[in-house]
Image 1 (spheres, rainbow, N blue to C red):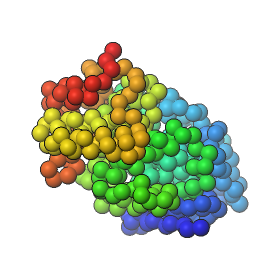
Image 2 (image 1 turned 135 degrees about the vertical axis):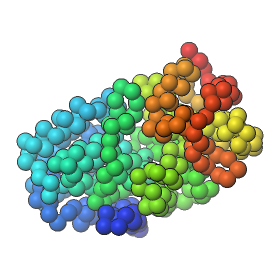
Image 3 (image 1 turned 30 degrees about the horizontal axis):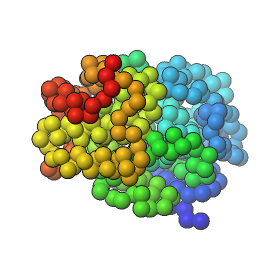
Image 4 (image 1 turned 45 degrees about the vertical axis):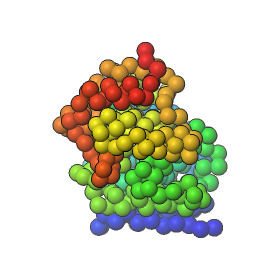
Length: 340
Ligand code: GLY
């Protein structure tokens, strides 16, 4: 069976992403030579678990975004200390995006930086979250507001994990795949699964290599995410990330239209690709409250000079700052969301 190996080119911090069936068996090759012991961070329903030759212990963190917080990091750090994890050892995050974000942040903070390897077991993790070194946790004011850039030493995307992935989580992953569709124009659904994931990893690896710390082009990976993060928070995370990204891209299309950056056919294309091709919901079932969403969007990490969105336009998708609330209102009107 084909294994794809994609390099994230970051000089002496470059690393490989392996995509294929059974690639978890190659995990040992990604561990730093200095590692004498490992701490695996995972969740209870994660399908794959590594078999390690070096001594290890496993920390199982809670399911659900309410556990993606500083308390979990503190709990993990205390377990690292009890186990005697040193800076030469390794942390292994095994799970979806929440696990790898937390494992990455715990590793970044432990002794001011300990190696981490990610084993992504969800589609969102494989095509996005586990790649590129963004780590972090939520606070009451917003998602992922506390974190660090900390590149892994390697990433494993073992397709065996997808065989038992719940349908809803697969759909969430498709929300991120649809994002790459709009960023590149690639017909990703035409590819078979391992090719599709490898292609998404290649797109992301190229963007991260060019702008590791999001001072420019990497921010495009947040297409649909400004509203998505606010929707996730306001729904108390009953709306999952990928579902919210799908709705967020529809909103971004209406916003770009309200700002006369794109015409109606391009908005319709968003509905066709997201709703029909990818089969994703184009608006949430839950009722929303505009004011609450706008307030949450003001706390977005991108909002350094007023409300900031990634928007489509005549020169393609780009960052747009200082978006007027009047345009947001027009976009909300056009989406005909159920309002509280
Ligand atoms: N998930 C967006 C990024 O890694 O930049």
